[in-house]
Length: 77
Image (cartoon, rainbow, N blue to C red; front, side, top):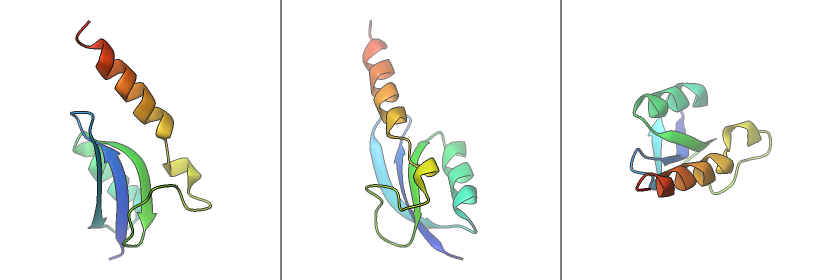
């Protein structure tokens, strides 16, 4: 089973990085989303993703992070 590095936003709005074994990147994405995380990047290999690999841009959503932080800032209002 291959290992994938990932970057997510947890339910508290904090960016988390890690790595985990999964059959495919799609399976890992589904698993992380089931945990309530917003997936920003998933890259095969052990290094932490800071930017998407060529061809994996559809897995990287930095705009989601910006929207999440904006909404979080509005919650106390």
